[in-house]
Image (cartoon, rainbow, N blue to C red; front, top):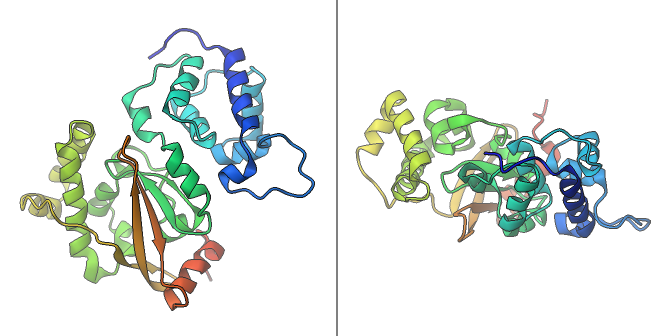
Length: 282
C-alpha cells in the first residue's frame, strides 16, 4: 500500500546516515589497520544486503526508482534496523509497512548475535518455520534456502514435499523430525498472530501428503526436536551437534546455533563446513 510519493532525498539521507553510523565490528567484519572510512563502505553494505554496489549508490544519491518491498527488507536487514527504523524506511520509499514485512524482518538483536558467529552454523527462522537468514556454514550444512519462495520457504512444507530436504538427518531420525515439525506447525496454527499463514501450510500439506495427514490427525503437541541432533553432510559424514535456541520475544523468531563438543570429530567437521561451503568436494 502506498503512503504517498517516494521521498528520494530523505531515503538517500537515511540510508547513508545509517551506513556511516555502523562499524565493521557491528556486522562481524575486521577493521584493517589503514581503514579511514567512517562507518561501513558502500561495497560492504551492498554485500550485506545482497545487492549491487551500483544500486546502493543510486539509492544513496537519490537516483533510484522505487525499491521493491523485498529490496527494502534486504536494506533494513543489512543496516540492522529495528522495527521503527524499518517502518520509517518503508514510508520514505512510499510504502506502508505490512504484516508480511514484519514477519520477514529479522530482529536486530538476533542479527547481531549471528554476525559474531559467522564461522558457526547459525540460522534464524520465522515464527512459522521459514529460514530468514543463514551463516555460510549453515548454508553448507542445510543448503542455501533463503531464496525459496511461497510455501516452499517453510521447513515443514519442504520436509513433506521435497525428499531431498530430509538428507541432512539420518533416516533413523526422520520419524521424530517429522512429528516435531508438525507439533511446531500446530502451535503456530493456534496462535492468532501466525494462524493465517500456518493454516495455509496445513491446508496445502493435507491435500498433498498422506504422511502429513496421518501425523496431523494424531494431534501431538508435545513433540520436541531436543538439543541433541545428528546431522549429515554428504562429504563430511555424520555430525553429532547440540542446537541452542534463542527466541526473540517480540517476533517469535528463533536463532539456532549448532555446536559440537570441542576436540571431537564432530567439532572438526563443523569447522570444515566453513572451508567446504556450498560447493561439494570432488
